[in-house]
Length: 505
Image: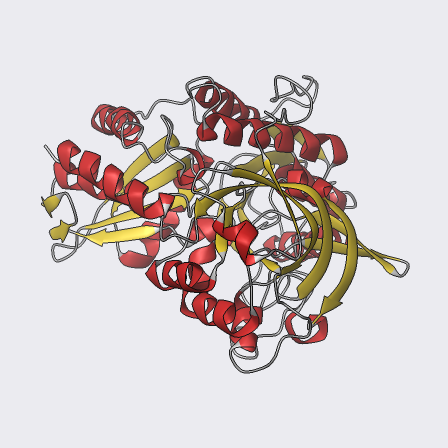
Protein backbone atom coordinates (compact mmCIF):
# COMPACT_ATOMS: atom_id res chain seq x y z
CA UNK A 1 0.00 0.00 0.00
CA UNK A 2 2.31 2.69 -1.31
CA UNK A 3 0.06 5.62 -0.37
CA UNK A 4 -0.87 4.46 3.12
CA UNK A 5 1.57 6.56 5.20
CA UNK A 6 0.80 9.75 3.27
CA UNK A 7 -2.94 9.14 3.57
CA UNK A 8 -2.66 8.67 7.33
CA UNK A 9 -0.41 11.73 7.64
CA UNK A 10 -3.08 13.78 5.87
CA UNK A 11 -5.69 12.44 8.30
CA UNK A 12 -3.59 13.40 11.32
CA UNK A 13 -2.85 16.86 9.90
CA UNK A 14 -6.45 17.62 8.99
CA UNK A 15 -7.74 16.37 12.33
CA UNK A 16 -5.32 18.58 14.26
CA UNK A 17 -5.74 21.74 12.19
CA UNK A 18 -9.20 21.77 10.62
CA UNK A 19 -12.28 21.68 12.87
CA UNK A 20 -14.97 19.47 11.26
CA UNK A 21 -18.04 21.15 9.73
CA UNK A 22 -20.56 19.82 12.27
CA UNK A 23 -18.50 21.23 15.15
CA UNK A 24 -18.05 24.54 13.33
CA UNK A 25 -21.81 24.77 12.84
CA UNK A 26 -22.49 23.99 16.49
CA UNK A 27 -19.95 26.57 17.67
CA UNK A 28 -21.35 29.19 15.32
CA UNK A 29 -24.87 28.62 16.65
CA UNK A 30 -23.63 28.68 20.24
CA UNK A 31 -21.76 31.95 19.69
CA UNK A 32 -24.94 33.62 18.47
CA UNK A 33 -26.73 32.78 21.73
CA UNK A 34 -24.36 34.73 23.99
CA UNK A 35 -24.93 38.36 25.00
CA UNK A 36 -22.83 40.73 22.86
CA UNK A 37 -19.96 42.27 24.81
CA UNK A 38 -20.06 39.61 27.55
CA UNK A 39 -17.00 37.62 28.58
CA UNK A 40 -18.68 34.57 27.02
CA UNK A 41 -19.11 36.40 23.70
CA UNK A 42 -15.48 37.56 23.80
CA UNK A 43 -14.35 33.98 24.39
CA UNK A 44 -16.32 32.84 21.34
CA UNK A 45 -14.76 35.62 19.23
CA UNK A 46 -11.27 34.46 20.14
CA UNK A 47 -12.17 30.81 19.56
CA UNK A 48 -13.61 31.61 16.12
CA UNK A 49 -10.51 33.53 15.05
CA UNK A 50 -8.30 30.76 16.40
CA UNK A 51 -10.15 28.11 14.36
CA UNK A 52 -9.76 30.22 11.21
CA UNK A 53 -6.04 30.80 11.85
CA UNK A 54 -5.42 27.10 12.47
CA UNK A 55 -6.99 26.18 9.15
CA UNK A 56 -5.26 28.98 7.23
CA UNK A 57 -1.79 28.30 8.66
CA UNK A 58 -2.26 24.53 9.03
CA UNK A 59 -1.30 24.76 12.71
CA UNK A 60 -2.78 22.85 15.67
CA UNK A 61 -6.13 24.25 16.79
CA UNK A 62 -5.12 23.46 20.38
CA UNK A 63 -1.56 22.80 21.49
CA UNK A 64 -2.67 19.72 23.44
CA UNK A 65 -3.20 17.23 20.65
CA UNK A 66 -3.92 14.48 23.14
CA UNK A 67 -3.23 10.79 22.73
CA UNK A 68 -3.99 9.92 19.09
CA UNK A 69 -6.70 7.27 19.12
CA UNK A 70 -7.51 5.32 15.95
CA UNK A 71 -10.64 3.24 15.30
CA UNK A 72 -9.88 1.13 12.22
CA UNK A 73 -12.12 -1.27 10.31
CA UNK A 74 -10.59 -3.58 7.73
CA UNK A 75 -11.83 -6.14 5.18
CA UNK A 76 -10.73 -9.76 5.67
CA UNK A 77 -7.19 -10.35 4.44
CA UNK A 78 -5.85 -6.83 5.07
CA UNK A 79 -2.81 -6.70 7.34
CA UNK A 80 -3.67 -4.76 10.46
CA UNK A 81 -0.01 -4.85 11.49
CA UNK A 82 0.92 -2.98 8.30
CA UNK A 83 -1.70 -0.31 9.02
CA UNK A 84 -0.51 0.10 12.60
CA UNK A 85 3.10 0.47 11.47
CA UNK A 86 2.11 3.07 8.86
CA UNK A 87 0.00 4.99 11.40
CA UNK A 88 2.96 5.16 13.77
CA UNK A 89 5.13 6.53 10.97
CA UNK A 90 2.47 9.13 10.17
CA UNK A 91 2.13 10.18 13.82
CA UNK A 92 5.91 10.55 14.22
CA UNK A 93 6.15 12.62 11.03
CA UNK A 94 3.21 14.84 12.06
CA UNK A 95 5.00 15.43 15.36
CA UNK A 96 8.23 16.37 13.58
CA UNK A 97 6.29 18.84 11.42
CA UNK A 98 4.63 20.48 14.43
CA UNK A 99 1.11 19.22 13.67
CA UNK A 100 1.12 17.23 16.92
CA UNK A 101 2.73 18.08 20.25
CA UNK A 102 5.09 15.39 21.58
CA UNK A 103 2.79 13.97 24.28
CA UNK A 104 4.01 10.43 24.93
CA UNK A 105 5.65 10.24 28.37
CA UNK A 106 7.11 7.11 29.95
CA UNK A 107 5.04 6.62 33.11
CA UNK A 108 7.98 5.11 35.02
CA UNK A 109 10.93 7.30 34.00
CA UNK A 110 8.99 10.50 33.21
CA UNK A 111 10.87 10.87 29.92
CA UNK A 112 9.09 12.22 26.84
CA UNK A 113 9.77 10.10 23.77
CA UNK A 114 9.61 13.22 21.58
CA UNK A 115 7.71 11.57 18.71
CA UNK A 116 4.35 10.51 20.21
CA UNK A 117 5.36 6.85 20.03
CA UNK A 118 5.86 4.55 22.99
CA UNK A 119 4.24 1.83 25.02
CA UNK A 120 0.50 2.07 24.32
CA UNK A 121 0.85 5.20 22.18
CA UNK A 122 -0.89 5.76 19.80
CA UNK A 123 -4.05 3.87 20.76
CA UNK A 124 -5.48 1.44 18.20
CA UNK A 125 -8.87 -0.29 18.09
CA UNK A 126 -9.16 -2.71 15.14
CA UNK A 127 -12.28 -4.54 13.96
CA UNK A 128 -13.11 -6.44 10.78
CA UNK A 129 -16.09 -5.72 8.58
CA UNK A 130 -17.56 -6.92 5.30
CA UNK A 131 -17.00 -3.68 3.37
CA UNK A 132 -14.21 -3.73 0.80
CA UNK A 133 -12.58 -0.49 1.96
CA UNK A 134 -10.49 0.36 5.01
CA UNK A 135 -12.08 2.91 7.33
CA UNK A 136 -9.86 4.93 9.68
CA UNK A 137 -11.31 7.18 12.35
CA UNK A 138 -9.10 9.41 14.49
CA UNK A 139 -9.81 11.48 17.58
CA UNK A 140 -7.39 13.90 19.24
CA UNK A 141 -8.73 14.52 22.74
CA UNK A 142 -6.56 16.73 24.93
CA UNK A 143 -5.53 15.95 28.49
CA UNK A 144 -7.52 18.82 29.99
CA UNK A 145 -10.85 17.43 28.83
CA UNK A 146 -9.67 13.84 29.33
CA UNK A 147 -9.22 14.71 33.01
CA UNK A 148 -12.87 15.78 33.10
CA UNK A 149 -14.11 12.30 32.15
CA UNK A 150 -16.33 10.86 34.86
CA UNK A 151 -17.73 7.48 35.80
CA UNK A 152 -20.61 6.95 38.19
CA UNK A 153 -21.64 3.72 39.89
CA UNK A 154 -25.37 3.84 40.58
CA UNK A 155 -26.96 4.13 43.03
CA UNK A 156 -24.99 7.03 44.44
CA UNK A 157 -25.39 10.41 46.14
CA UNK A 158 -24.22 13.50 44.27
CA UNK A 159 -23.78 17.10 45.47
CA UNK A 160 -26.84 19.28 44.72
CA UNK A 161 -28.61 16.33 43.08
CA UNK A 162 -29.20 13.84 45.86
CA UNK A 163 -29.73 10.15 45.20
CA UNK A 164 -29.21 8.76 41.71
CA UNK A 165 -31.05 5.48 41.24
CA UNK A 166 -30.50 2.73 38.67
CA UNK A 167 -32.76 4.19 36.02
CA UNK A 168 -32.67 6.87 33.29
CA UNK A 169 -33.46 9.54 35.86
CA UNK A 170 -30.33 8.57 37.77
CA UNK A 171 -28.41 8.59 34.50
CA UNK A 172 -29.70 12.11 33.73
CA UNK A 173 -28.52 13.42 37.09
CA UNK A 174 -25.09 11.81 36.65
CA UNK A 175 -24.57 13.38 33.23
CA UNK A 176 -25.61 16.83 34.47
CA UNK A 177 -23.19 16.46 37.37
CA UNK A 178 -20.36 15.70 34.93
CA UNK A 179 -21.08 18.92 33.02
CA UNK A 180 -21.31 20.95 36.22
CA UNK A 181 -18.12 19.66 37.83
CA UNK A 182 -16.08 20.29 34.68
CA UNK A 183 -16.79 24.06 34.95
CA UNK A 184 -14.10 25.78 32.82
CA UNK A 185 -11.44 23.13 33.29
CA UNK A 186 -12.58 21.13 30.27
CA UNK A 187 -12.63 24.17 27.92
CA UNK A 188 -16.39 24.57 27.78
CA UNK A 189 -18.60 24.46 25.84
CA UNK A 190 -17.99 20.75 25.78
CA UNK A 191 -19.40 17.67 24.09
CA UNK A 192 -20.23 14.40 25.82
CA UNK A 193 -20.05 10.76 24.82
CA UNK A 194 -21.92 8.59 27.32
CA UNK A 195 -22.31 4.86 27.89
CA UNK A 196 -24.96 3.45 30.19
CA UNK A 197 -23.91 0.02 31.45
CA UNK A 198 -21.11 -2.36 30.41
CA UNK A 199 -18.12 -2.77 32.75
CA UNK A 200 -15.75 -0.02 33.90
CA UNK A 201 -13.18 -0.34 31.13
CA UNK A 202 -15.46 -1.06 28.17
CA UNK A 203 -17.96 1.56 29.33
CA UNK A 204 -15.35 4.28 28.93
CA UNK A 205 -14.37 2.90 25.53
CA UNK A 206 -17.97 2.92 24.31
CA UNK A 207 -18.49 6.42 25.71
CA UNK A 208 -15.51 7.70 23.74
CA UNK A 209 -16.78 5.99 20.59
CA UNK A 210 -19.98 8.06 20.88
CA UNK A 211 -17.87 11.15 20.20
CA UNK A 212 -17.50 9.91 16.61
CA UNK A 213 -21.20 10.52 16.00
CA UNK A 214 -22.01 13.74 14.07
CA UNK A 215 -23.34 16.44 16.38
CA UNK A 216 -26.46 16.89 14.27
CA UNK A 217 -27.55 13.23 14.15
CA UNK A 218 -30.52 11.74 16.04
CA UNK A 219 -30.18 8.70 18.26
CA UNK A 220 -32.04 5.71 16.72
CA UNK A 221 -33.23 4.70 20.20
CA UNK A 222 -36.23 6.99 20.99
CA UNK A 223 -35.65 6.92 24.76
CA UNK A 224 -31.98 7.85 24.37
CA UNK A 225 -32.83 10.51 21.77
CA UNK A 226 -35.21 12.08 24.27
CA UNK A 227 -32.59 11.92 27.02
CA UNK A 228 -29.93 13.51 24.79
CA UNK A 229 -32.25 16.42 23.97
CA UNK A 230 -33.15 16.92 27.62
CA UNK A 231 -29.50 16.90 28.71
CA UNK A 232 -28.68 19.54 26.08
CA UNK A 233 -31.51 21.79 27.23
CA UNK A 234 -30.81 21.43 30.95
CA UNK A 235 -27.01 21.59 30.72
CA UNK A 236 -27.29 24.89 28.89
CA UNK A 237 -29.44 26.25 31.71
CA UNK A 238 -26.64 25.63 34.24
CA UNK A 239 -24.84 28.86 33.36
CA UNK A 240 -21.29 27.49 33.26
CA UNK A 241 -20.74 29.04 29.83
CA UNK A 242 -17.61 29.25 27.66
CA UNK A 243 -14.42 28.75 29.68
CA UNK A 244 -16.49 28.76 32.88
CA UNK A 245 -17.03 32.52 32.57
CA UNK A 246 -20.80 32.13 32.85
CA UNK A 247 -23.09 32.18 29.84
CA UNK A 248 -25.87 30.46 27.98
CA UNK A 249 -23.95 27.61 26.31
CA UNK A 250 -22.11 24.97 28.30
CA UNK A 251 -22.62 22.00 25.96
CA UNK A 252 -22.62 21.62 22.17
CA UNK A 253 -23.34 17.90 22.00
CA UNK A 254 -24.49 14.87 24.01
CA UNK A 255 -24.39 11.38 22.51
CA UNK A 256 -25.54 8.38 24.55
CA UNK A 257 -25.40 4.62 24.03
CA UNK A 258 -26.37 1.71 26.27
CA UNK A 259 -24.76 -1.70 26.74
CA UNK A 260 -25.73 -4.72 28.80
CA UNK A 261 -24.23 -4.91 32.27
CA UNK A 262 -23.69 -7.27 35.18
CA UNK A 263 -26.42 -7.48 37.82
CA UNK A 264 -24.05 -6.03 40.43
CA UNK A 265 -22.94 -3.06 38.33
CA UNK A 266 -24.64 -0.01 36.87
CA UNK A 267 -22.03 2.35 35.48
CA UNK A 268 -22.59 5.66 33.72
CA UNK A 269 -19.36 6.49 31.84
CA UNK A 270 -18.93 10.02 30.53
CA UNK A 271 -16.25 11.01 28.00
CA UNK A 272 -15.99 14.80 28.12
CA UNK A 273 -14.55 16.56 25.08
CA UNK A 274 -13.73 20.26 24.73
CA UNK A 275 -14.94 22.76 22.14
CA UNK A 276 -11.76 21.92 20.14
CA UNK A 277 -13.56 18.72 19.15
CA UNK A 278 -11.04 17.18 16.76
CA UNK A 279 -12.11 14.00 15.04
CA UNK A 280 -12.17 12.99 11.40
CA UNK A 281 -12.37 9.81 9.34
CA UNK A 282 -11.65 8.54 5.86
CA UNK A 283 -11.99 5.48 3.65
CA UNK A 284 -8.94 3.95 1.97
CA UNK A 285 -8.36 1.67 -0.99
CA UNK A 286 -7.11 -1.62 0.52
CA UNK A 287 -4.75 -2.24 -2.39
CA UNK A 288 -3.01 1.15 -2.58
CA UNK A 289 -3.83 2.88 0.72
CA UNK A 290 -5.06 5.94 -1.22
CA UNK A 291 -7.92 8.03 0.17
CA UNK A 292 -11.19 7.20 -1.57
CA UNK A 293 -13.36 9.60 0.43
CA UNK A 294 -13.54 11.63 3.62
CA UNK A 295 -16.14 11.34 6.36
CA UNK A 296 -17.45 14.39 8.28
CA UNK A 297 -16.06 16.76 5.65
CA UNK A 298 -16.28 17.35 1.91
CA UNK A 299 -12.86 18.48 0.61
CA UNK A 300 -14.58 19.97 -2.46
CA UNK A 301 -16.62 22.34 -0.31
CA UNK A 302 -14.81 25.56 0.68
CA UNK A 303 -14.17 25.91 4.41
CA UNK A 304 -16.23 28.82 5.68
CA UNK A 305 -14.72 31.33 8.09
CA UNK A 306 -16.03 31.01 11.63
CA UNK A 307 -15.11 34.53 12.74
CA UNK A 308 -17.46 37.29 11.66
CA UNK A 309 -14.58 39.76 11.39
CA UNK A 310 -10.82 39.52 11.15
CA UNK A 311 -8.82 40.03 14.33
CA UNK A 312 -10.09 40.58 17.84
CA UNK A 313 -11.80 43.92 18.44
CA UNK A 314 -10.57 45.78 21.52
CA UNK A 315 -12.94 47.94 23.54
CA UNK A 316 -10.35 50.44 24.74
CA UNK A 317 -11.11 49.50 28.36
CA UNK A 318 -8.41 46.84 28.54
CA UNK A 319 -5.68 47.31 31.14
CA UNK A 320 -2.14 47.08 29.82
CA UNK A 321 0.26 45.17 32.08
CA UNK A 322 4.00 45.37 31.45
CA UNK A 323 6.31 42.87 33.12
CA UNK A 324 7.88 42.72 35.61
CA UNK A 325 4.73 43.54 37.58
CA UNK A 326 4.66 45.61 40.75
CA UNK A 327 2.54 44.77 43.76
CA UNK A 328 0.67 48.06 43.36
CA UNK A 329 -0.26 47.25 39.76
CA UNK A 330 -1.51 43.82 40.75
CA UNK A 331 -3.54 44.97 43.74
CA UNK A 332 -5.28 47.54 41.53
CA UNK A 333 -6.81 44.74 39.46
CA UNK A 334 -10.31 43.38 40.11
CA UNK A 335 -12.11 40.21 39.02
CA UNK A 336 -13.55 40.84 35.55
CA UNK A 337 -10.81 43.19 34.34
CA UNK A 338 -9.51 42.42 30.85
CA UNK A 339 -5.75 42.79 30.54
CA UNK A 340 -3.21 42.89 27.71
CA UNK A 341 0.22 41.65 28.79
CA UNK A 342 3.40 43.04 27.26
CA UNK A 343 6.94 42.00 28.10
CA UNK A 344 8.32 38.66 29.23
CA UNK A 345 6.76 35.58 30.80
CA UNK A 346 7.79 32.01 31.56
CA UNK A 347 5.87 28.81 30.93
CA UNK A 348 5.59 26.33 33.77
CA UNK A 349 3.49 23.18 33.99
CA UNK A 350 3.46 20.16 36.29
CA UNK A 351 7.15 19.23 36.10
CA UNK A 352 8.37 22.82 36.52
CA UNK A 353 6.22 23.39 39.58
CA UNK A 354 7.38 20.14 41.18
CA UNK A 355 10.98 21.14 40.36
CA UNK A 356 10.56 24.55 41.99
CA UNK A 357 9.51 22.92 45.26
CA UNK A 358 13.00 21.39 45.56
CA UNK A 359 15.23 23.64 43.48
CA UNK A 360 15.70 27.37 42.90
CA UNK A 361 14.33 28.61 39.55
CA UNK A 362 16.75 28.94 36.63
CA UNK A 363 15.51 32.56 36.19
CA UNK A 364 14.64 35.54 38.39
CA UNK A 365 10.90 35.27 39.00
CA UNK A 366 10.44 38.44 41.06
CA UNK A 367 7.53 40.33 39.51
CA UNK A 368 7.22 37.65 36.82
CA UNK A 369 4.25 35.92 35.25
CA UNK A 370 4.20 32.15 34.93
CA UNK A 371 2.08 30.70 32.13
CA UNK A 372 0.51 27.26 32.57
CA UNK A 373 1.25 26.18 29.02
CA UNK A 374 2.85 23.29 27.18
CA UNK A 375 3.51 24.79 23.73
CA UNK A 376 4.26 23.20 20.38
CA UNK A 377 7.74 24.40 19.44
CA UNK A 378 9.86 23.83 16.34
CA UNK A 379 13.54 24.66 16.05
CA UNK A 380 14.56 26.44 12.85
CA UNK A 381 18.31 26.93 12.79
CA UNK A 382 19.21 28.43 16.16
CA UNK A 383 15.73 29.89 16.72
CA UNK A 384 12.70 28.31 18.34
CA UNK A 385 9.36 29.04 16.67
CA UNK A 386 6.08 28.84 18.56
CA UNK A 387 3.56 26.78 16.59
CA UNK A 388 0.81 26.61 19.25
CA UNK A 389 0.60 27.97 22.79
CA UNK A 390 -2.78 27.93 24.55
CA UNK A 391 -3.21 27.49 28.32
CA UNK A 392 -3.41 24.20 30.19
CA UNK A 393 -5.65 23.42 33.17
CA UNK A 394 -4.35 25.24 36.23
CA UNK A 395 -5.90 23.11 38.96
CA UNK A 396 -3.11 20.54 38.64
CA UNK A 397 -0.70 23.14 40.06
CA UNK A 398 -2.84 23.82 43.13
CA UNK A 399 -0.56 21.80 45.46
CA UNK A 400 2.42 23.97 44.46
CA UNK A 401 1.26 27.40 43.30
CA UNK A 402 0.90 29.21 46.63
CA UNK A 403 4.36 28.14 47.76
CA UNK A 404 5.93 29.15 44.42
CA UNK A 405 4.33 32.59 44.77
CA UNK A 406 5.63 32.93 48.34
CA UNK A 407 9.17 31.77 47.66
CA UNK A 408 9.97 33.51 44.40
CA UNK A 409 7.96 36.74 44.27
CA UNK A 410 5.69 35.70 41.43
CA UNK A 411 3.06 38.37 40.63
CA UNK A 412 0.96 36.72 37.93
CA UNK A 413 -0.30 33.27 37.00
CA UNK A 414 -1.90 32.65 33.59
CA UNK A 415 -3.87 29.50 32.89
CA UNK A 416 -7.40 28.19 32.47
CA UNK A 417 -10.10 26.79 34.71
CA UNK A 418 -9.10 28.67 37.85
CA UNK A 419 -7.42 27.51 41.03
CA UNK A 420 -8.38 26.67 44.59
CA UNK A 421 -8.37 28.07 48.10
CA UNK A 422 -4.63 27.67 48.77
CA UNK A 423 -3.71 29.66 45.69
CA UNK A 424 -6.38 32.27 46.41
CA UNK A 425 -4.96 32.79 49.90
CA UNK A 426 -1.44 33.22 48.49
CA UNK A 427 -2.64 35.71 45.88
CA UNK A 428 -4.18 37.80 48.64
CA UNK A 429 -1.31 37.55 51.13
CA UNK A 430 1.60 38.16 48.75
CA UNK A 431 -0.01 40.36 46.11
CA UNK A 432 -0.45 38.28 42.98
CA UNK A 433 -3.25 37.66 40.46
CA UNK A 434 -4.69 34.79 38.43
CA UNK A 435 -5.33 35.59 34.76
CA UNK A 436 -7.55 33.36 32.66
CA UNK A 437 -6.59 32.78 29.03
CA UNK A 438 -8.94 31.19 26.48
CA UNK A 439 -8.49 27.42 26.52
CA UNK A 440 -7.76 25.79 23.19
CA UNK A 441 -6.90 29.08 21.47
CA UNK A 442 -3.41 27.87 20.60
CA UNK A 443 -2.99 29.88 17.40
CA UNK A 444 -4.38 33.07 18.94
CA UNK A 445 -1.78 32.98 21.71
CA UNK A 446 1.05 31.81 19.47
CA UNK A 447 0.52 35.04 17.51
CA UNK A 448 0.92 37.04 20.74
CA UNK A 449 4.39 35.51 21.31
CA UNK A 450 6.84 37.70 19.42
CA UNK A 451 10.01 35.82 20.33
CA UNK A 452 11.26 32.77 22.19
CA UNK A 453 14.05 34.20 24.35
CA UNK A 454 15.27 30.90 25.78
CA UNK A 455 14.38 27.54 27.25
CA UNK A 456 15.32 25.82 30.51
CA UNK A 457 15.01 22.19 31.66
CA UNK A 458 14.37 21.02 28.10
CA UNK A 459 16.62 17.96 28.28
CA UNK A 460 15.10 16.93 31.59
CA UNK A 461 11.41 17.42 30.85
CA UNK A 462 10.85 17.60 27.06
CA UNK A 463 9.12 20.28 25.00
CA UNK A 464 5.70 20.50 26.70
CA UNK A 465 7.06 20.53 30.25
CA UNK A 466 10.15 22.68 29.73
CA UNK A 467 10.34 26.26 31.04
CA UNK A 468 10.10 28.54 28.00
CA UNK A 469 11.15 32.19 28.23
CA UNK A 470 8.84 34.22 25.99
CA UNK A 471 8.37 37.79 24.90
CA UNK A 472 4.70 38.65 24.36
CA UNK A 473 2.68 41.56 23.04
CA UNK A 474 -1.02 42.21 23.67
CA UNK A 475 -1.48 38.82 25.33
CA UNK A 476 -5.20 38.76 26.20
CA UNK A 477 -6.46 37.46 29.55
CA UNK A 478 -9.22 38.06 32.09
CA UNK A 479 -8.71 38.53 35.83
CA UNK A 480 -10.72 35.73 37.44
CA UNK A 481 -8.92 35.62 40.84
CA UNK A 482 -7.64 38.89 42.27
CA UNK A 483 -5.36 39.90 45.14
CA UNK A 484 -8.35 40.67 47.39
CA UNK A 485 -9.63 37.12 47.79
CA UNK A 486 -12.27 37.29 45.06
CA UNK A 487 -12.71 34.35 42.66
CA UNK A 488 -15.04 34.18 39.67
CA UNK A 489 -14.60 30.40 39.71
CA UNK A 490 -15.72 29.94 43.31
CA UNK A 491 -18.69 32.28 42.78
CA UNK A 492 -19.76 30.54 39.57
CA UNK A 493 -19.41 27.06 41.05
CA UNK A 494 -21.75 28.07 43.85
CA UNK A 495 -24.25 29.78 41.52
CA UNK A 496 -24.34 26.91 39.03
CA UNK A 497 -24.61 24.43 41.91
CA UNK A 498 -27.82 26.16 42.98
CA UNK A 499 -29.20 25.80 39.43
CA UNK A 500 -28.14 22.15 39.40
CA UNK A 501 -30.15 21.58 42.57
CA UNK A 502 -33.23 23.04 40.87
CA UNK A 503 -32.73 20.64 37.96
CA UNK A 504 -32.65 17.67 40.32
CA UNK A 505 -36.45 17.54 40.09
